[in-house]
Length: 211
Image 1 (cartoon, rainbow, N blue to C red):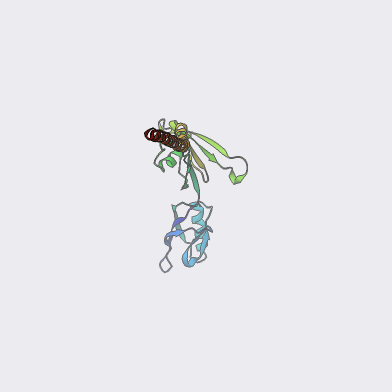
Image 2 (image 1 turned 90 degrees about the horizontal axis):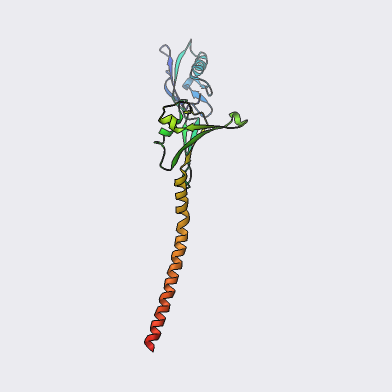
């Protein structure tokens, strides 16, 4: 169970301590059930977690029945990387809930920026770091205009959704970064030349006046 908070409710006779409300899942994967101890539920489905909690509580209660619901997921992530057209890449880390598709991820950053192209893909790491990563090309036009689900992939933990930059915008950014230093150099050179010409003219004028 890749969750950070679960809602646990104990259905039991009066006279026992109530276990109702939100319970955080710790970094060690356990949920604290107050005086009834802790139960490790990391990696389990909701149904499996419910069953395991009931088995644990049966040590203290007779035939306990619990309900478990997931309130938030934040222990697994995907990454949305957008190229910055020569101005640096932007990286957004977003939690996995199990329902995110490509279109959801782009909507989460309020759509594509003016410097982004429509070229994008998912880089999916190899399971367990063994083998080769997958590259899943995305057809943005089909997803949006055609309402196609073929490349509107579901995002999995550690996926990298990469959005390439617009090439013309990058060229413009690079030119704007390269030209200013040369403009300043030529500006100083022009200022020096104008100054020398002024000195020469001033010198000639002064000589003529002395004659």
